[in-house]
Amino acid sequence: MATTALTLQTVVRTGLNPSLVAAASGDGNVFDNSSKRVFLWVDNQDASPTTVSIDTPNDVDGISIPSKDISVPAGAARLIGPFPEMYNQYDSDNSIEQAVLVTYSSVTSLTVGAIYLPVAAA
Image 1 (cartoon, one colour):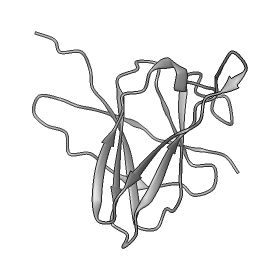
Image 2 (cartoon, helix red, strand yellow; image 1 turned 90 degrees about the vertical axis):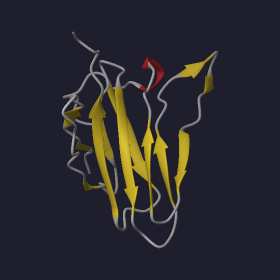
Image 3 (spheres, helix red, strand yellow; image 1 turned 180 degrees about the vertical axis):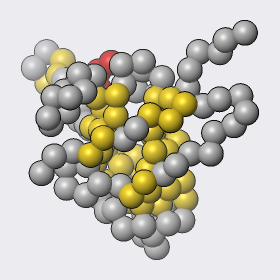
């Protein structure tokens, strides 16, 4: 099973109405993190909390860095990020070189979106 890529949605001054999609079960979602300015929007409308796990593919002195786990309460939303380079990896089909991999303890009534915050311009 392959990961499902999230399309980056750019924040603009006139406002972003994010388009959230159903969270992918199994291998989860990935998004391009080459800018290191991306946030993951997670909306959990299930009756139970869910855990969002951000994979960390690297290690320090041979010691694996554990995944970053974030609990999202039932009926709540969280904006998670941004993600430094230590989270970057190739996605499962090698189409995104600097991807962040996200999995979920449950995808019932869970929607997500990848939100890109650009540098402010004049």
